[in-house]
Length: 127
Image (cartoon, rainbow, N blue to C red; front, side):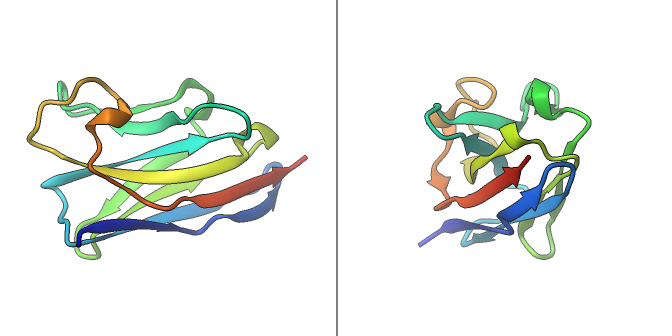
């Protein structure tokens, strides 16, 4: 059964850094695109960083630009999310999700496009 699993969350002080990992099983980069989402307490899930099929670029949520960076290791079938200069408002559950790259997406960071979701990893930033 294909799956993706996140790890690397934790408690960190504001200004600190974390690196999240998303390990893919039964799925291979680049045939599958893995993006990152998060859900803050009391809020809807939102896209944090997503790959755009239309132009091959990566789009970041406005409030994480310049602080978060995605990277991929095809040999390890793992996607990372480096998070720097963390703020209290970054607190939430972070999810990675996989979609079939060749399938035309409904949109950017549209969660209906994703076939596999991880269970999530909690990130708590103390101020």
